[in-house]
Image (cartoon, rainbow, N blue to C red):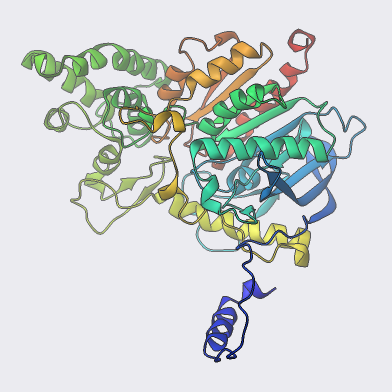
Length: 511
């Protein structure tokens, strides 16, 4: 397996380059940069205890060739699939799960929420430290209700371009959705699962991918009608993602600021009953705060002082600080400022996490304490888990947990490449998918302490025109972006998802 020894390859390449070529040598014919190997397929059998039941399943690691409209193979999607050994194998629900990024593999959902084994990390937002990391049976695995396929888009995981194609050919809003849709259809065909109920589940940027997929799959000539779309901490509309200088971004972030200040005991007066108080914050954000921002320079000094004082009450930051920020405090500044007096900064994806930095007077944090505390545990545990399962049958190419260079090369949608195009907004696509498929249901999970994709932003987006509220289930959790790292939230999310699948099996949801 030569790719596991890159220094040997480098030395070999150098030595070959130093050998003079024969005088009469005929140039070798050009070859594809990524030769197309035969698709591989390996399976193992295993079992796990979940909810008092022994689940016996087949875990497969397989390549699925993706072809363009000319019939040329352009990529191999390499997927981990869990299929329960069950009598209703052809019609049992199947869920295609992916993380976001863009440029992330699916290990977070695989090893944190959905699969039959999960990484155990401290539930109280502490750093997971150094190995060993416990790998536990996951009693909340969704394998109880659905088979699982973990999708690694091209350039992540083991998935890669082949032939004349390059990985970056697939790095864009449209290109990504098209290739993942082709993979889904290929998987359904190869595994004879077209008769099954079908779900997609996306986290973070997976919200954008999931919403666009719901429309794309239904529009395509090889139509796939989904039974459900599940969103975990979704990005729907880039307007609301942390870092955008937009008034609605500040408005939708305010309830998360308040929940975080409450969690860290940073309020001057901590309300005894948090949830009704957070509802007051939400009403203030959507009312007086939004009107104040919209007023701009026309806002009177008295109104400005009143709003700043209320913002201070809700967030723990001083009214003076809010005033100097023109009533607009970005998420990165909030993360730096809230616990500045304690010498601490907060995580971006989960503001329960705290860390220290050498620069205690800086304007914004230099890193995210959450990812620093979790990524090593997930990477090490995944590598150990898949090697135990497949050993020497694993591909020789490395597994890319995050696609190298993907984010910086991601192309905007073709509809958004004109000079005056705005943010990427996927809600019209989701609304169209729900209109065209009256059986399509939506589940959305958000964590209170996530400031990248906030609770209020998801709530706002899923209440927009065209989204049928009777088919939307919305849940909030006492954690952040990856709420499943908080064990109580993991158990609650697992129960909520099982209820969502069970509701889809009821006669009222059938045609």
